[in-house]
Length: 389
Ligand code: APR
Ligand code: PHB
Image (cartoon, rainbow, N blue to C red):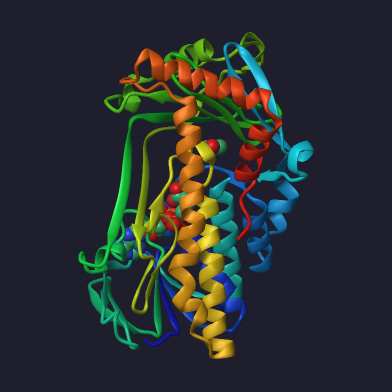
């Protein structure tokens, strides 16, 4: 098989890139290790920056998001039993859309099917070859048969555990990492949200977050220990702990119901540089991970795709190599700013078991300064809604 761009991974990064390329007449094939149902079963965050929404519109898959998504003009930061609103609209005149990543993935899959794009699900043992030549190849196995895709470029959109990043020689790749000493325990529940907006809670017992998917479905998180297992946290225990971290009004508004999903995610910051090697580009989680506190995972995948899609259209439509050569540096500049913001939000709001009394006083002071300073709130707001591309 021959295509212009072979895309590894059918997460949001791979699907969005594929859709934008198809729309501009650039052929591509997506190779995905899992089944479509498995991909759609993963629960992830649901905060969409304006730039991400624009890109979904450009790809022709934004209709349902605009219809069903909730526009949020701010968030609340809670500590010491009081909540403080960060008013994005008033501070910077911008907002975000609350719309689950699972729904975005579903819309992208439907768009791809309608456009006749080819996706090979359950592609086993995907391997990359001759990536430093101008005729790279991708091999995989499906139903016991070996296949080869010849292409001009490979887009490695296969997440943190994928094969693409590992195909770059170790001597070339530099990685930077911080692993946080805690995780997030999250539940999905068919009850209305605690508040109209997201509440991020900094508490001595640990972080908590009251988020939502729709006006009738909540997503709730509490910071937990890395040793904890989902089985250690029956719903009653989850709600008891959450209530200890919330202010009285939030507790009164919390509607408890049986969880329909429950999972624990570790928190990590990670960046791999460069994001291009020869004819291979990395995009999304394949190149970087952020802790979820800034809601940047999906949005960073989208900004990578923005730079990459532009680079590839410049190559095919304008015969220019410039975008391709600039891709890694451009994407990384924005990646590091989102890494900084996600690390800052995480550091400010979590309980760090090894922190000294001094560290804890500084953490409290950071929060008090934030809510007392328009400049500090503006800095949070402009990062949260998304820095410009
Ligand atoms: N071969 C083929 N596909 C693979 C391989 C492989 N060896 N390894 C992983 N994949 C697939 C995964 O099954 C997954 O469907 O690549 C896809 C990667 O998707 P995501 O992990 O969703 O990553 P990405 O598209 O970069 O999206 C980034 O989504 O995952 C969240 O936290 C993440 O919000 C962030 C955003
Ligand atoms: C979520 O709704 O799952 C969510 C929202 C905001 C975050 C992280 C997760 O920062």
